[in-house]
Image (cartoon, rainbow, N blue to C red):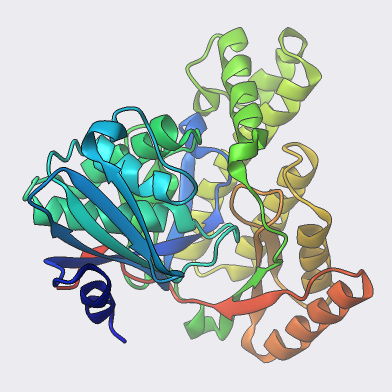
Amino acid sequence: MKISEEFTQLFGHSPEVIAQAPGRVNLIGEHIDYSQGFVLPFAIDTVTTSAICKRSDSLVRVASAQQKGSIVTTDLSQIADKTGDGWVRYVLGVIWALEIKSGVDIYIDGKVPLGAGLSSSAALECSVAIALNHLFQLGKDSKALALLTQRAENDYVGVPCGIMDQSVSLMARDGYALLLDCRDLTTRHIPVDFAGAELRLLIVDTQAHHALIDGGYAERRASCESAAKKLGVVSMRDLDGATLEAKRDLITPIEFQRARHAVTEIGRVLSAVSALEKRDFATLGELLTQSHISLRDDYTVSCPELNLVVETALAHGALGARMVGGGFGGSAIALIHDSDAGVISQAIEHAFSNNGFQAPRFFTSLPSDGAKVIS
């Protein structure tokens, strides 16, 4: 059944706007968007779809294809109190951030895997935001919507995320990664042609699901902000490795580790852009693996499942591999030859089984388009 039919069946009238927004894979540049660094994500072809209709009263009714028959009802007057539980908070947060003054019915169909490090939350936020922007003719561009959906997640949901996920979900282009400068939100589209080199990016959902709201993410962001303040800079973007090393006694050992990841990861992103432009995929693979090591050892956001994916993929011929997303579970990526896909996937499955881990899920995606109104 189409989403419009499901909406009508549930709410008793047709939707006025249907929009979709994708999840993302961050090729490289992890945990540095909130340090004003550079990131290089691309949108995947898995999306969250939102169907929306205005109401004549102040009620907000929200339902999901993944929770059949359940409708959560809130009054606009309650939204100012930052009400709502679970995934519904992301929807209400967007309504709050966009300052919507009319009741709405909203039906969500989320296909981006939850907790897999593929930014299901941003896909949800951006699909709702672009639909509301169109429905109420707010006239906001992609940059404005990215900032507003980030505000919804930061200030309403309570997750201190950076701007990357919302930006790529809204601004991505088919066939390109998005180089995003998180300081001024300028962007550049970088061609990604893995297929032309007989390569593919294997995405492995470890099914060790994380929850960023538990404080781990916030602690690491706070460490970087504290280090920046003690070192007299605005953010990690203003540091280089030599300066950080020379001033390491001014910060705690943990702050030094977190800062070292941020400084080196910013450099790796720019090197990755150069490698992609030169079609130097061997160097790109090396950078991916260096990123994982830094996230594992300096940022300590990896986990046994993610490490096992990376180690197994590299042992069976991957050019490079790393964890993606916030960490503490979720997904990893491996840059592999097309001909090795079966061998590497089987090796990872066997390694997980031998270690008593839940079976992983595998998929691939080419860089895809960002959010759009579809009807």
